[in-house]
Length: 429
Image (cartoon, rainbow, N blue to C red; front, side, top):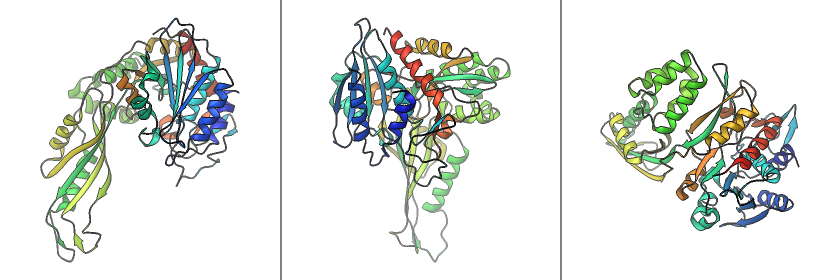
């Protein structure tokens, strides 16, 4: 089965999370891998949301390497698709469907690579449930309840990275070496409440407006972490001339924000890689559900993302300095990530990409979001985002993920499967 055919089959399983219902997709992959003589285990905390762990035996000449990806996808509700999202349609050289990029396309590459590879050491493949809703039934379950499965593993390949990106006329291939950390922040604003028929000023709702306006207009302080430095220096080396000069000035925190503002869309892409960020996403208030009661308290929940190596207390300190007095801030659900970057495998992956595309420039990548790699990091495993795709110039990879008409070039699937196979076969630890 080609990676295109494999992806088409995977797209036809409706694994929208919630509820996920990944069982049929996992069973399909179990049977497919077993048919290639590959050892497979299925483990679950919920029988409808199982996880697959396969092991391809190597020659005993290298430590084990892990490939990992997720079978669940996000909703298509409220989106206007021009092609059916769950039919795996192949049309005009593209495979269309929810999950084509995130990340059933990557799974098709990994599974194909596993069935073709002749590795020096054992290769594990973990296909998990529940990544899109926190990973509790998926990677977190495996790491907490079955850590022995990953004994001896130091490095892993997962999402996102290895896709092509056109910048200043050069084709870059960002390979994820680090990711930001999730932290849910709660802000509570209080003020005098009362009857809605009277004029009220300076209360909780007014303070809410000031908080949201401040978050909309101002940044938190700039930080140049090691992963960001590696990425910016890699981009600068690939983009000589004026782009190189601007990029290198990003690494001077006193200049960072001014330079970002000069860089247009590229600056907007790099901005969250040089700052902790928070976005207000949910607001609760109201006078007990009554329109005529001015609330005395409003609660705002915010999606916080923290740079590698930094922590939630620093985020709260930066927020307090930004928004001023009168806002009570706290955090919960902090998922700590790896604080250090292990670049041991990067040159292997970069070499594979250069062979695949002689005009490509692999660069380290700091992901502004999070992946299941954060759970594996608790076991000391370094994940590299490596699902390689050569994409058409002008295709906005990030904007296509989770959006209507998610799709992937069919040729990119074979490109990625072959690149992963070569990376696996060359791995020596």
